[in-house]
Image (tube, rainbow, N blue to C red):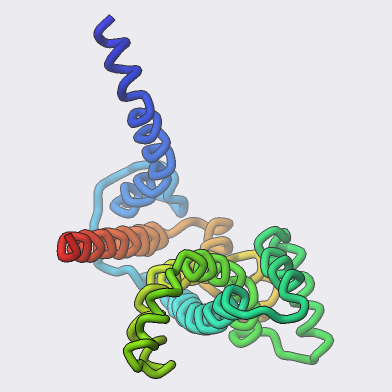
Amino acid sequence: MAFVNWLKRHLVVIAGLITLGYLLLPNVIVTVFSFNKPKGRFNYEWQQFSLDAWKQPCGVADMCGSLSISLRIAALATIGATILGTMIAFALVRYRFRARGAVNSLIFLPMAMPEVVMAASLLTLFLNLGAQLGFWTILIAHIMFCLSFVVVAVKARVMSMDPRLEEAARDLYASPAQTFLRVTLPIAAPGIAAGALLSFALSFDDFIITNFNAGSTVTFPMFVWGSAQRGTPVQINVIGTTMFLVAVLLVLTSMVISNRRNKQKA
């Protein structure tokens, strides 16, 4: 009876831990198999513990080249989508203009539309314009794809902002630029950062839109897809584990900074 009562009190926590474990299970498997030394071409069965892949993460031909392309595209797409998305979010929240409702609705289309539809549409556009498929067409496609996610993240933050803080800054003779840089931007920063991180993850991970508009350019997801048909090198698991650890480190750093600020305010 005591166990049943304890289970009822902690049921939500237990369900949350089980769900979290289920979500993290693929990452754990990738991490474990990054230390494997397979006998054949496929890294699907555990054979022997080895650090060879970690010592030579670029031991596979063209892998680090494709990784570099993906990182550059993700970084540039994040910058472009974050700047444009932030401006669009502020415009939608702070200003009234014609077709504002239609723009609000259109923003959600890339998020609701299947990626293959957007990929085919962008490919048709680029071919009609006579553009050469490659790095820049991928970048443009990624910015268009990530833009909606940035707008939604920043818009939610801007809508929760207290306009009286900006009014107080103006009452204290702050210029519009000073008000934006010292009041508006710091308050909106968490939403902008969330949109930027989401944009980077989506761009780095994308395969469908990239595959349609890449031409002869090979990004890291495309390299993984091609390698899986010939034999999966262990170095792919190394890169995956590294990206996962970097993401966890960023989240932990954000939590530590947030906790310190809350303690200082208290």
